Length: 174
Image (cartoon, rainbow, N blue to C red; front, top):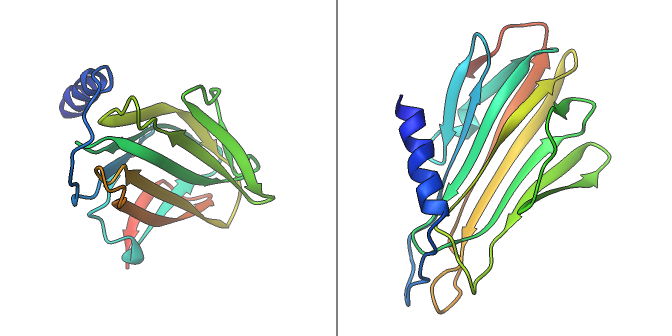
């Protein structure tokens, strides 16, 4: 229920333009929600990413929702993911989002906001399948705002270590 209310609130926010403030010193926030038949977890900019690893089960499907929020407008969201050999999306990545290869081992899912028509939130959801045995990779997340009239951008970022293998999905703290 909590996630349904959050998604509804975000969709309402997405449908309303926002104003870029004169001064903006508050960094944007993000969340990455993952769910499967036996696993559910939401990661935010407040997590201690240097002390956790996300273990994904080989050949298991996961629903995802990535959200970036900023009262002064979302300028950029980047989500770096492993190649399709290890993370295969079940759905197409559609506009206003795009996906591109950045190396043989990783891709970038990207949202680019428009300063002339800023929105306070951007959200993408879909499904992916984790593939591989004893694979170590990273989900990299970066969100930036417009930084007010001065364009001194504020940002939030994280690198979530992931492992794909024959284990059950879980978050491990170490």
